[in-house]
Image (cartoon, rainbow, N blue to C red; front, side, top):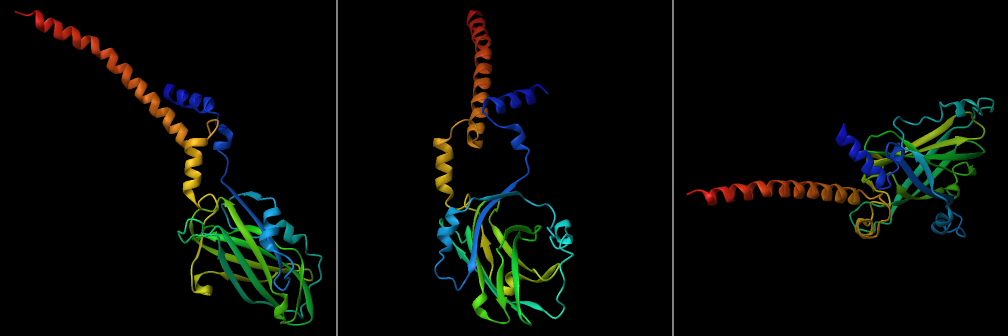
Length: 262
């Protein structure tokens, strides 16, 4: 109990926010989207102007179609004459600074077709790491689709900032229409669909040497794990040194007694 008290006091002295240490893991990212035909909008430039979206990492799959928000749309009239399909979708991996094969930015594009007339739709995008729960990271603006026209293909560029450890990810695209109460179609981009792995990590994992040296030599306060370990190492050295000094006089006394013996 005494040892725990010492550790707790040490954490406080080092400047750790104890409630923050117990907080749920967070995910942070920023995204921007547009019709792919729009050549005037530079998504990379728009992305840099966006504020990051921070949310708790889910422990269960997020099912928005069955949520209270989805039920709130029940008053929208369904058009039973329309069928929807994600005709084509793909993902491009962007920004692998350290060259380890894992990228911290992605560009997802998808072409949604409707069987009859036009429709106003929007998409929700999710990520799942190696079978973990789906986590929504972006909802697009409204956009119009026109039958099977390919010129209404939509794309979303995303930069993952925190909370996405290196791994093989799948991407879920859910499509919603203003003329329908619930999700109208979806598609999963995985190895089965693409024929290749989606290898992703967030920005904090990319270029780790820069982060390491900054944390090691330029950290302020006490937020660094390295600083914490160094602190406890110093404590252990001091304790060991005091123990050695305490034993030293005894050994000298014994040597003196031995020298006095005939």
